Amino acid sequence: MSFQTQGTHATLPDTGIGPDDDVVSVVSRHGIDDTHAHRAKSVAPGVPVEANEKLVLEVKGLQESLGKSQCMLDAMQSRLQAMEQAQTRSEAQLDLQIVYSNPGQCPCRRRKRFQVHMGRIPVRLK
Image (cartoon, rainbow, N blue to C red; front, side):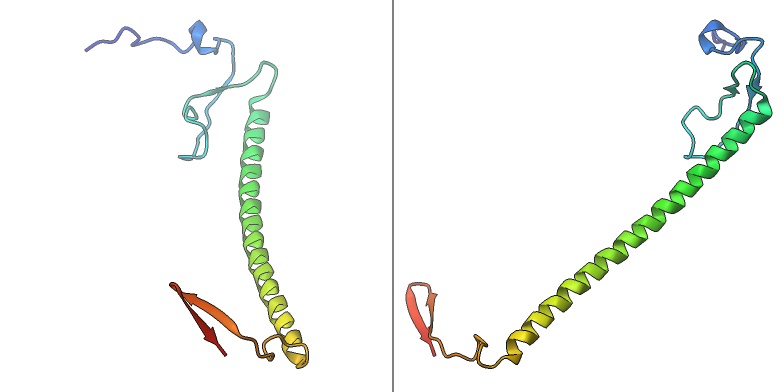
């Protein structure tokens, strides 16, 4: 079976790569770079290939650093959330302890009559 595009060179006008352009082949890890990473990358005229390779490596290093920083930020955020919950709990316990330490002002020590409605029959509790 023969295709019409078989044997077509990469220097056609629609590829964006000319016959005089320097081309750098970049090896990519699966899932990290874009979907067309397996294709050769063209270098702008006047830019040395080595400089472009250095730049690509630096960008990859920055991406890894950003990923590590994001993981550290997520871990710190979860620790902060746990500490905030513990602080709220401690403040509530302290408030209760203050209320119960003053026997004359404790609302639970006063005798009150509560009226509870169960269905339609009112019930008094003493």
